[in-house]
Image (cartoon, rainbow, N blue to C red; front, side, top):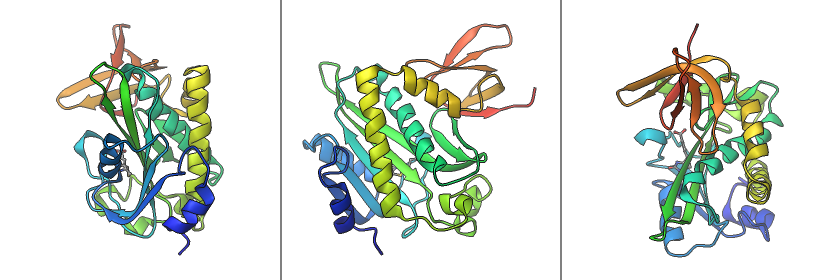
Length: 264
Ligand code: BTN
């Protein structure tokens, strides 16, 4: 088993993301652990990695299934000099980083589904959950970016509730993948795009995001609690909202929910 604190520390030494690693055999949620560490002053680039999570958190208070020994569950602490309204750009940027990475491993189409699902051939392979703490002055204090990637889990081992909707890198590549290599490459790509986001702005990240998104130009429905928004997807805006044109041609911004393409 090469996926451990020692090997990760050797491979990540001196890097901006991952130089400071907290590796656990089991945690409730890597996001929760890192949120506490960041509140106590953990520096930019600190990461938490766990073999398994007992209360892995997904979007909209869902559970993220986190069995041991096969996948990546990690969280990255950032201290970005941005206003809180732009924090969703970091979630979208993370989606691009994961999509770029997984495209190297699989021949199947890697796509992004708003707001943050990475899919291979239409099945979810990765989820991203960013949580922010803002200071009293209204600036971002820190952001914790949680990333869960189904790496070597096999279809038969997914819980039945998600078996038909989920996939793993190994299922798509046809062989098991080194989690050590994948984690190192993930942090490297993440750092490249994060640096680009801060230095050059959101433009090229947004273009990359849209190039991975197969919803643009299609009719979609977004469900959030009891609300349903429907319309043709035009794209995303600089605040991470999905921009749609409703049936009267009115432009609407959707900021949260589950999106799916519907037949016209
Ligand atoms: C989603 O698609 O609903 C988001 C899932 C995010 C899961 C990751 S696993 C690592 C980190 N810790 C958590 O508790 N959640 C995120």
